[in-house]
Image (tube, rainbow over the protein chains, first blue to last red):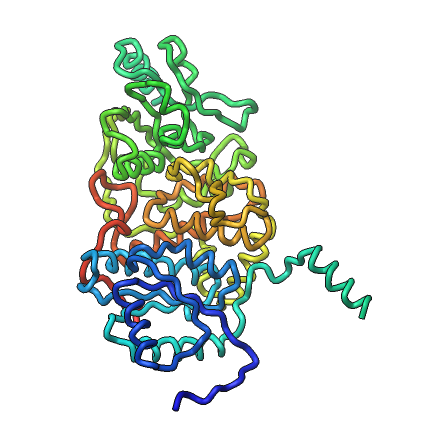
Amino acid sequence: MGKKIEIHDFEPKIMAFVCKWCTYSGADLAGTSRMDYSPNVRMVRLPCSGRIDPQFMIKAFEQGADGVIISGCHPGDCHYNEGNYYARRRNTTFRQLMDFNGIDIERIEFSWISAAEAIKWTEVIDAFTEKVRELGRHPQYNDDIVDPYAQFLVQKEQESA
Amino acid sequence: MIEQIRNQARKLLEDGDVDVVIGYAEGSDPARTTPVFIRKAEDVDKLIYDPRCINSLPLYLNKRHEYTRKGWKKTAIIGKGCDIRAIVQLIAENQLKRDEIYILGVPCEGQVSHPEKWDGSLHDGNRASKCIGCDVMTPHETDFFPGDKPDVDRSNPYEVTSPKVANLMELELDKRFAFWRTDFDRCFKCYACREVCPHCSCNVCITDETTPSWIDPAAHKKGVFSWHLTRAMHLVGRCTGCGECTRACPMDIQVDLFNQRMKEVVQESYSYKPGYSLEDKHPLITYQVDDREDFIK
């Protein structure tokens, strides 16, 4: 039956911001059809891909996500007629902005997945997880921020051990 | 030139056509000028214009400022080309009505990059980088202009004037990240870049919102990166390149490099140049069915 479980050194954290009419239903179909896909993805359901503010992606990276997936209906299929066209324009510029900032745009995936494309969803997730795993941990902005309280706790633990 | 502007401003104030004239006056030291709000006709002799007048005056037309709530019906404003671009962009975004504003255009020969670099004259050593390749030295949208207005071809694409943008784009990805990391290390989040921007028009800035707190308010790198990315994203296709954000930065962070790069992207992808048309829609609030989607899987 299902896939063989592999153990990796690094499990990437992946955020998915998805449209509820297409991609969320597609993922739902994948679930009800008992398809296997990588468990690294955390999904957030939004009304439309046009609702996905670049702020969400900035926040996801700020909070330690290693990759972000944005997904919605195919062009022409939007429940609100034109939301995904706006999302497309917004992401064209946002990707260039992230690139200029020195963040690898391979970490941001944009994909059109309809409610019937459960197989495409599993393929996209598996391929993206594999890609991010190879890229490694996201160079977080907060690498050299050390929480003094956390440091104190670690120190205390070492002393008592 | 300035005499003609003064006479026109005096006439406007005496006739009651405008309630206030916003312009420049001598500042606290010889290298500086300061913005003035002139409400009486006898005060117009304070007005000056020379390469030291680097402040961006359209800032005071932005609705988030109290000046716009003083009940002034019509405002006259002295505008150099880059400021008029900002005014045009505000009108195109419905932040302002064209008939609320009387634009006194001035011919401009360039500005100094910073008051500290002023040594009595303007030369290549102290010229602001935005003035190189400027196509609005004769302003495009004016109500009054001293002398004749020559026709200038403004159809050329937006020119990136800071060599740093191209240099950064040539660097490896991680080097670029390291550059911003060292630069942003100095940022202590005074938000001067926001306060000085003529296009930041939210009533409550997203950084000031606390429920939810979208951007980490602390001045460590996490919050600083988020803030600068958000700021640049909000100005995509709206920034008219006055360069005030970089000038206002007390830590010399070149925050306008982001804006310059994004202007280039918007020009390439949607051939849109902000600040040149009163009617054209901003590229992110409109779409074409056949927009580029080479990045979409």
